Image (cartoon, rainbow, N blue to C red; front, side, top):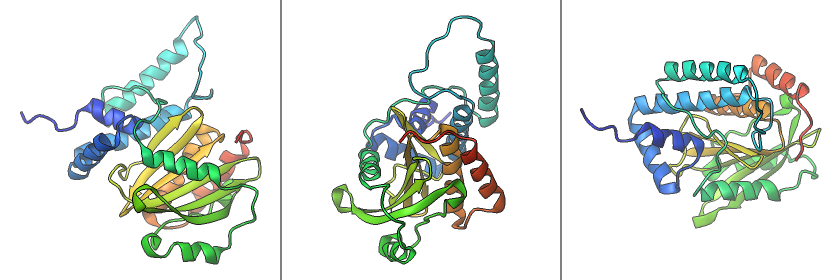
Amino acid sequence: MRERPVTFDLLNAYVDGELDAAQAAKVARAVADDPALAREIAALSRLRLAVADGIDAPAIALPKVAGPRRPMAAAAASIAFALFLGGAAFLSGIDRPTAGAGWLAEAWQAHLTWSAGQAAAPIALIRVRQAGNFANAYVPDLTASRLTLIHSEVRAMAGGGQALLAGYRGTRGCKVSLVVFPARGDLIEALRPFRRDGQEAYGWRVGHLDYLMLSDGMESRRFGLLAESVHAGSRRHAPFDAETRTALRESRDSSAPCSA
């Protein structure tokens, strides 16, 4: 039997954002050449989103509670069933820190440096900035989630590259960034979560472009739905449909104000 080029543990670490740049690029190349690996990555990503949606408490510093564990047993049974359906056999570390991802650190720096107090960005200016390498970049309308596009710029990245940054401001303290840059081989088409110290991001690839969506302070359930919606919209390169807009609006209305 031919040895599997990428182990499940390596796939799991890739989805958790634990690999360094060289390892992540190796997995991304293997996944691009093997539809079965791509299906496993997609299943793992969906599973992590489902588990995150089922946790009401913050993802960090969860207290250990003594006593009966029946709810956890039920959750474990659900996870096991989902893993069976997805062809996976092991789950670990949903919220482990990301290691060795310089591009992710740059994206966080971009997110933190633009101001949420500025006026709305002119649409014409955004279109101009989408020229060149970003001619096909997808910059969504997030008003259904009560988020207004107020910032747009092309930033210099390490190594001489550039990234398109779109910044959104909410009505209750929310701040969300979408960073688009030429694909570097670290991301794949499936949605990949990154979580660290209360900060959340999701990354994916569409064609020759990589996308990163970032937020600090937005409820995980709401931000996960938002990222899923933008991910799906970017693949179709189309506005949200009515069902998605309704889901985003209801998610916003039922969530707590952002702490960012």
